[in-house]
Length: 424
Image (cartoon, rainbow, N blue to C red):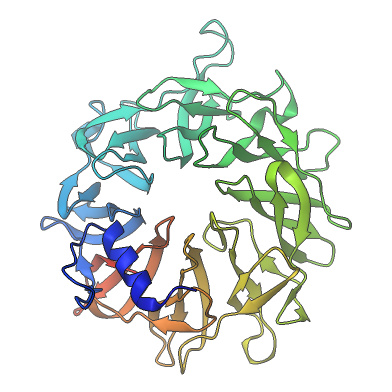
């Protein structure tokens, strides 16, 4: 591991902070990202250059914002969105500052939510991510869309849903609103596949989840598209498992998911590139763990370095609560994170490629605080409640593990604010 000073210099260089000499310290203070006109803001996502997207209330209406280089701007609604509200934002890619793709949704002229993208440098020009028009523009046409992921190139994945509620997995090319179907057999039951994640590889791959069809008994089939134009392949199911779900794919095509067993057992699973393996998380601290959450992005994360932040159902004094752990899939055992003194319980939210992890814990007073874990450590450090109120919740960290964002209560506990910092 590099000395901590070297790491700080790396973070500052990435974030654009100019250092004069080796002894100049970096500032890791929280920065208030709230728009002046807004209240009740919630952080949605942040990237490595510190661009933040957030959802706020403006005169009780839902409005999304983007903060680029310290300047916060409202993301414009679709021209058909009545009164320009409501809209929302939920993700941003890891592109260069001012060139990022921001993804969210706005209501259309029929008052139906449709997926929308913005360029962070042109927040006043939304692009509606249109439904797939169907064969010959007639058969199988969609009526609404939902986005589920975006990569560094600006490719957005999601689904196009027709008037009967049947979904088709699709992607939208960078700066395009036209949907292209991912390769799914025509009229196959897997036509209701939902893409879960797309990676940042030069030739991107996609993972998703499909219904098993008439003979599947309601089970899920986890699938992998090696390229945007390739046919999908189903992931192998570990011995003894009934079925699996997938949620994350990293730049090296490692895949994170969760497999379902009998007796209400859920286990986090990592497949190697292209679906090889899989490796099942069997124990935490050397003891058997019946439930390790690996499928829901809010409950686990896979970094581009191949490390997993995972939560497990604890025993002893924490029985019934999920607790945080870090897992190197080279083994089938994870190690729990030691929470700050006096903590009741907590969960980990995300992990960056630099090994830094971020999560939340409940204090002895019953308040919620964010925490971070240094690379190579298993000790959580309390990040406090920077908005002045008793509670703050970490909602995202950047892919590289450089920035984190929280939603915190103000001192009056009547307002919610977005704060960003370089992860110490």
